[in-house]
Image (cartoon, rainbow, N blue to C red; front, top):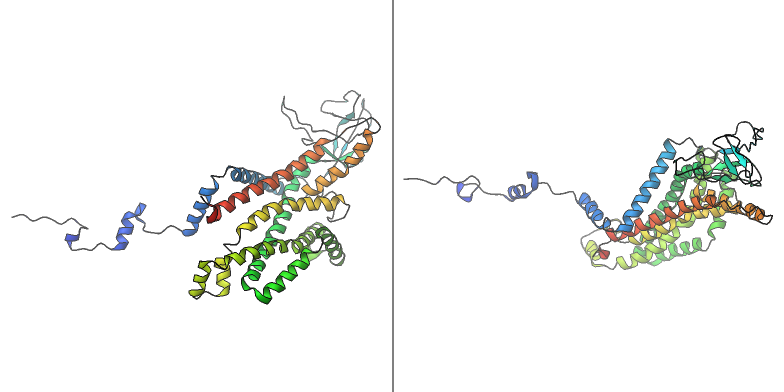
Length: 399
């Protein structure tokens, strides 16, 4: 007589199969651990984000700008609080240079004269500081001024290196704009969520405060705030002149920036608080703080991405407007920031246009083109990226 030997793990061997063992057997690798929900959320976000071509382009440009800013902050030799001033020698046939001692010099010569030496760059006869970009394609070489000269005065020999200014300006533009927009959005997000959720007297009080701030002219307020604080506390929190000026400017912009986000979020919260999952949270015993943080704010944050994408490129433009109008908002009039550099390039344009009236018309296109291109790429990349993040994070927009 023969007996069948039960297979281990089968119901006939006297052992039971628990749910945990089934999960272990069905899980790849046999770990039996559930995937981290936060990691799973990031994977879903990346899955929807990578399907958006414009968002990927924006992400690539943002990574490039951040990389340039890190390089400028760590490896660049350019001064962090002022552009380096250069001087064109304008030597002709071995003539003596009129540059002051201590200034870095670049060999230049006026148009119509023979080059005094190899590696010298031609400038217009009436504009000795108007050095065009010095890069060449064949053979490839960048030269000392790959983005040309940022002219102080068309009649003088002194100028700034546009490339150095754009390199150093990348980190300052990121620091200022991200600090203003990020802090303003964070304040407006929670103030707007509280106003829309609580309603009643609290909502009316906060909204009237928001209306008061929105009625104040932005540029005028920043000018007055910076002037007053700089006079009362020239060294804010013990910082040096440059750090104190930048921090004062950031605080001034934050004060006028958060009300926009508060109004946007408040309108979104008025819709979200009526949803069924908010009622379910109340029914389960969740308090107001938990409901706001876990349910109201996460589902009201999507419009903030769009507003932030529009604002992050606006901050350097505001800085450029203030510099162009002649207000001293930085410790140095030649501060390495993209908006400030753009303002300097436009303010010098009038001097070049005046030379056109006497027949020596030379327009330094590079002074306007490169700062404008940097601001454009910065603003459009954040816009593309924020649109993609909104579509990836908002379940209502997924298809």
